[in-house]
Length: 158
Image (tube, rainbow, N blue to C red):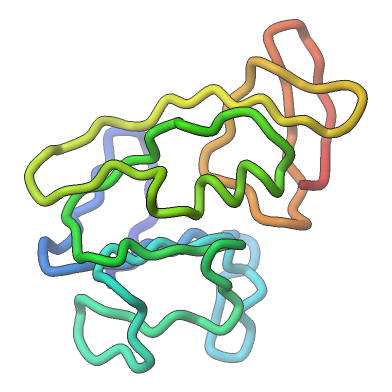
């Protein structure tokens, strides 16, 4: 598993074709073995998470992650995957459940997918917000800034 700081849109990840994991974390709170609170989300492209990481192609899932809530894995090792935008309307809980569900991802070893360009509608109660994009996916309890084409803007806890 590589640690890569993306500094510009032109910077590309160089992931292994033998399996990799991607971890997103808060750069103001970089995770360590004694403090995992800076982690945001994780994806495992190497099949089921291993209990002990023993190579550069697999990593044990940190205890802060729960598959389906703030992380997920593809059950079969894949080189390429992209969220298929099949669920783009719902509450934060509904969207998170869809995004962290393998059936909503296109994956294989040959097709290089472009960046998913889903436009999500987040229902937060009586006033739904439409026409915005979130990337990467937020985790429960985090704050996000939401703005839309109709100049609606506010900070929300998801």
